[in-house]
Image (cartoon, rainbow, N blue to C red; front, top):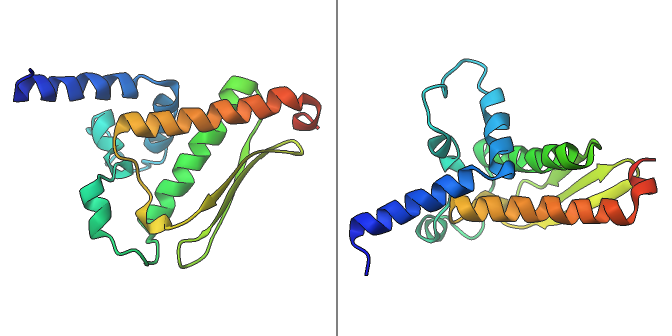
Length: 161
């Protein structure tokens, strides 16, 4: 069995693997690009993405019904913008996110390229947006990009229209 140090080191290794994924590298670049005053220059990549992490305990403390605050909306917009950028990096096509969220935290995100909708996601409880771990953040983002690329591969003429 592992010791507490072994468990901590295992988490660090998993965190390092997640940070090395193309999706999280893209998200890190995007977040750093929005730091116009250099306030985040000294932050490591994991700390920079910590705002995207929401553990089960943290999620339980957030009321079921609530209005998303500007920080949550920024995280949502940044996440889906990153999905679009990752699609662009892989497919060479601009994927534009369109997001509509009510003040109650319900809405929809669409990503389009050309005349093709490559991602359509219903948002619920936007005020509780976050991922359990960096690995889960990387996994979900990568899956969205992979699914969008698969749609582009099926309908390339529509995507390029």
